[in-house]
Amino acid sequence: MRPAARNRLDPYPSRCTETPDVLARNDPVVYGRHDRDAPFAAGQLVRYERDGFLILEPPFETAELALLQAELERLRASVGASDFVIAEPGDSTLRSIFRVHELSPLFRRLVRDARLVRRAEYLLGGPVYVHQTRLNYKPGLRGKEFYWHSDFETWHVEDGMPRMRAVSVSIGLSENTEHNGPLMLIPGSHRDYIACVGETPSHHYRESLRKQEYGVPDPDILAALTRRGGIKSVVGPPGTTVMFDCNAMHGSNGNITPQPRSNVFIVYNSVHNALQSPFGPEKPRPEFLAARLSFEPLEPIAGKLPPGADDGR
Ligand code: 6CS
Ligand code: FE
Image (cartoon, rainbow, N blue to C red; front, side):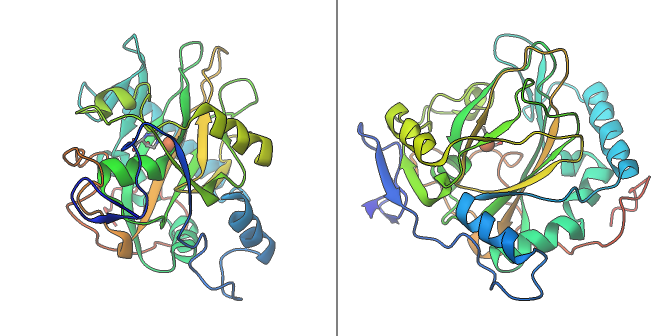
């Protein structure tokens, strides 16, 4: 362990030397016991543990997806300029909208859906809360890449997430094909903590959400990860849903096809892994990126996504 910038022991130091490093993961991948009431088939848990991600049987019906797709467009049309609305680098094309579970009754209901929360609770070994949500639009012709990164490396250094006990859910809201910049994951990469070089610039998120240049893996280490694990592209029709470990190395290419590659991402964090002060030198990032005001556990809601979903449940 190396002393963190705040003189506390840091199990996952990064961006504090000029030499990249590969550190062992000192946290479980699946915190739940592999027992019969798991909301996963046994083989699925083995794959998640081994690969760091799992593509689920599509959990939502066509009519529910249609509601989510309509909400994607409603937010695109209605959201104004704000710090949680991110444009593509170099132009004003919409790239991402964050905190969608606070902007939209339907996304507020989605993050509580039992089909997602129960699975996150099992993987994380208990109650969960929302760390972050976002819509990535990756528009046709102009959607730019998301360079390779481990979300946990950013959330640890810049948000103070102590341990690897969070999981992301990505739900495709458009056709994700091999051509339009699908999410790419490196199987097995979640088992190594890739310590990055360089120092976090102040207000780094104002650039990193458009084009990430710090907190990215060393090229030789990245090559070794892909030689060992290959690359899996998450392709499929709208509704294709993948859960991936917070430390899985992932990224996506730009999109020069006319078809958008739009996804909604939900990040569940264990209530036992609530954010502390950042392990890097910077002040905490804004609330829209990393929830700090409340670590209240989510109450899962069963049943289909309701048309209005404005009951605020
Ligand atoms: O910095 C973050 O929190 C965001 N950046 C990326 C590229 N993925 C995770 C998250 O949305
Ligand atoms: Fe990411």
